[in-house]
Length: 84
Figure (spheres, rainbow, N blue to C red):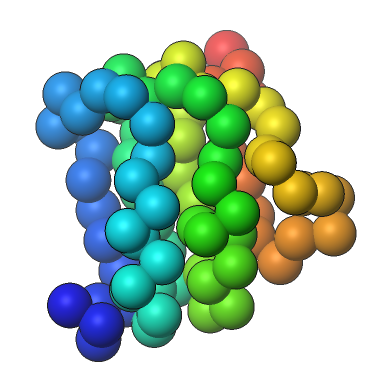
């Protein structure tokens, strides 16, 4: 799994928080988790993926902040309220 570049997990009825295990996907560039039931903050482990450029979280209960300073982050965020 460490060679996964793009991971599209939209519309899967996932619930809970984003798992820290995603950190093992060191080549991940795109992570789409929209249209699920995720909540909580974005784990630092996800934001520490240096190749991650797109994180799609729209249509979840995800909070808009991360546990680290997301303004200095290299990731493009997509939030639920940007589509309303």
